[in-house]
Amino acid sequence: MGRIIGIDLGTTNSLVSYWEDGASHLIPNRFGEFLTPSVVSIGKNGTVYVGAAAKQRMITQPENTVSVFKRAMGTDRTYNLRGKWYRAEELSALILKALKEDAEAYLKEPVEEAIISVPAYFNDIARKATRKAGQLAGLRVDRIINEPSAAALACQQANPQQDAKLLVFDLGGGTLDVSLVDCMDNVIEILAVSGNNHLGGSDFDRVLAEHFCVKNQMVLGALKPGQQEIILKAAEKAKIDLSYAEEATMRAAFDNQEWSLVVSRQTLIQISAPLFKKIAAPIKRVLNDAQIQPSELTRVVMVGGSSKMFVVQQYLKFLLKNVSFAVADPDHMIALGVGIFAGIKERNEDVRDLILTDICPFSLGTGVINRDDPSKGDYMSTLIPRNSSLPASHIGKYSTSVDNQKKVTIGVYQGEDLYVNNNLYLGEMTVSVPPAPEGKEHVMVRFTYDINGLLVVDLHVPSTGEKKQLVFVNGVTQEADDDLKKQIQELEKLVIAPKEDQNNQMILSRAEGLYAQLTGDAKKVLEGHIRTFTKILASGSKTKAMKASKALMTYMDLCEQLYLQKEEVNGDLDDFQSWFAGLNSAEDDEDMEDWGGIGFLS
Ligand code: AMP
Image 1 (cartoon, rainbow, N blue to C red):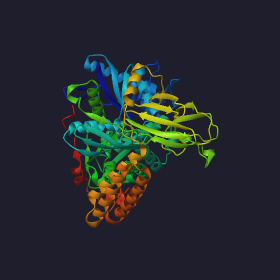
Image 2 (image 1 turned 60 degrees about the horizontal axis):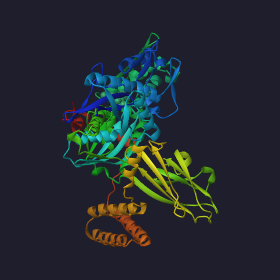
Image 3 (image 1 turned 135 degrees about the vertical axis):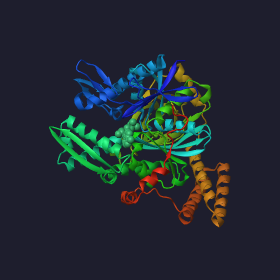
Image 4 (image 1 turned 90 degrees about the vertical axis):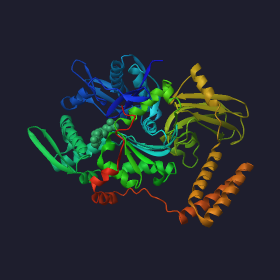
């Protein structure tokens, strides 16, 4: 097998890595740098500039230069460069091609395969676009890995003995990914993910640039593209300066004029209030989804270039008080993690035992008739809920909705909305049913989803025995070839956990967690409830189990209200501002654990 490289295809910068001698290493580009700016520019005679050379041209040739196109992966958006239109995956392919060439020159051997990381929040279409970008660059991309999984993998390699619950906070140039990761010996499990595909360092640049313009009686949007770029660049520089100093001076010069403005960290917090709110939301969501309190976190791992922002670091410390923080070389973490994955895929002895479990970042389900308000379209009936561990397999039973219905069409959707029309449509399949009164005929629908983005939808009509199967690979329907058939056979061996069983198990684990926290009589009463509930579950009676679970949950709610002080993630910005104002930054810097020198860095 040839060499496999790992690629962190970032919004702002991209990196490439490989596995050798028991460690993941970064590969420098042709200029000797690890970071290759994700920028493409086309010259007069069609010359393509990629990376630092293209970034330089953002000021001189803004109309022939593009950046931040990762946000448009998998969309129909196109970019015009010298009269030719390019899709985001074509531009990404140019970056990947440059990275491939740099890797080949450095490793002195051809590279045909890559593992590429993407934000956990990328949907199947964006993932497929990433794979296509790889193909266009001459790289086989069998495996796409979530960026936070890669970061967790790198952390786990650095601290192999540690059993830890990590909150991976990844704020890059254009995306925010927040994930809860459970690391136990050699098992890494993602418990929950959330994020925002439209939030990153460039939003802070824009806010600062607009503030600069307002203070200097200009309107950013009304300036020429090249002038806007000058101000945005000055804003980015000031933002970076503010990572290391209380104040920074923004300067811009064009049309024989010069402007300047002093900005402070306090100003940055004030003018970026909406961005801070957006940062807090996914953090609250993952903690809530995984039912984890902030105090249960072992560590917050900050990755992505924008995690270097002092005000962002402090905001996280404000949100998650008393949790230890690690700023683990934010630029390199993900790429190093993908490099470890390359090592696993190459079946290197030293990493073979590492197990990475992943979760489904979106819910998968089918549509069911909406009689309440037909104008809104069908309801989404979720079969594989968001954050299910992969591989996952769930069965649902669907009944006919009119008398003498002849056919049942099962649509396949991805997303969190109550109505399928607002979710992503992946495909559909129709089966025939014998005529019968409404609700008397059924179709059993099984969704099976694995870590490689393979979704198998099986339909079974019990009354006729008819069976049908639809296979999606990364969101696209596909005829099953031999390899795929083998993969599907593997998945068929999965034990299916019915939904209600899982629900009961969740209630039971909540009860066990609460039991550990309670004391005195409340603990004894809860113990009685748990015993009764467990006995009923073992008896197999569904109605009794439902009643017992309700009683148990009511008692747990009461206990939590009476005896436990719920920790809240407080995101109030006014509170943060006064907290920040009273902060002694020099002292606080010392609390930050700096993992810059840990063993796995090359
Ligand atoms: P990434 O997409 O992870 O490469 O992150 C790129 C973003 O990180 C850009 O918006 C940069 O301006 C920002 N960035 C890089 N270094 C720093 C720094 N020292 N302080 C603040 N922001 C930074």
